[in-house]
Length: 116
Image: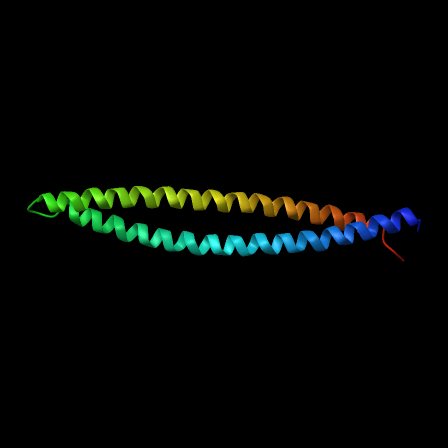
């Protein structure tokens, strides 16, 4: 094996170590995002139920109308938050696929340049 292959092999090994660490960070972030998505979805469901109950409550009062307006704003805000969380998770998934691709390429380099 030439010295050039040996250098490429070690460079690939370093990149693999860095990319594995980066992948672990992405996976940790995705776990946190999953937790937040679950919590937000649960809270959104509760707020939607409260809003529905308030919307159909009788007799209608100004206080009840204010509660419906507040709950509607809360539900809209929670939906936007949920969309943002899901978008962030989609970005992390894309990043993970990119890292997986880099890892696969570096593994191939190590195979070709294997140190005997």
